[in-house]
Length: 289
Image 1 (cartoon, rainbow, N blue to C red):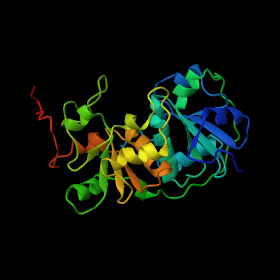
Image 2: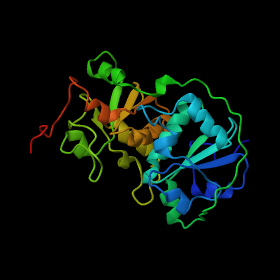
Image 3: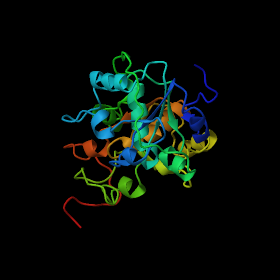
Image 4: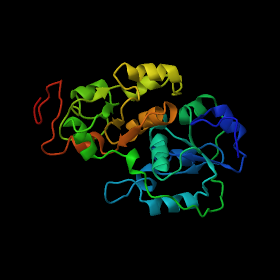
């Protein structure tokens, strides 16, 4: 089914007008526990990021079998238009879009521009009941490994065996090594700094502060081109655990059409790996003050 708004982003107006459309499935992917249960976009289904989209024992994204079972339970078929939204400026909703893309679902998977925050700001309707859906029989493709960077891919860039560009989207204090993690967030790495050769464009520079909506395409192109990210070479996005970087992955890949892989190991993997080179402009020392 064709829709008037067929791009990677949908507006809050579009979504409210299409809530009753049986070919549209709205999915909330928030990180705050209980948020969905307290109120969600009417008709939305819930995905729990830390259990549904990842393996809960080994550190990995959800297996094809696990993700396929989830989509069947949510009634998602290959022709379903999926609209993802969530809290934290859609970080984890963007992670969801990345996982959908890895398993071959891309064109019909969209983000709600501005996410839950914009929906709330506009005082649009919320519901607390969960709408029953008919299970699907979807069969997923094998994962597209080119959308996911591993530490070997990153080291190939560091050691100049690859021409890919590394884009670190963390805050300047994280990037320089002044801090390891944002305030109030557990420090999961034991070293501070960034991957040598990486450039830094904090994810928040790509959104409007007032409502979290993504800035216009030409502004985005200019923003990233200022640090040499122009789509002429493959790009690897990275952050702390891969969720903020998936937001930038979505912008670069889905909106700008660049070739991008998300490094979900990010700093918690790289900063804990023995023997890899680290850039630390802040000069912080492990165990020091």
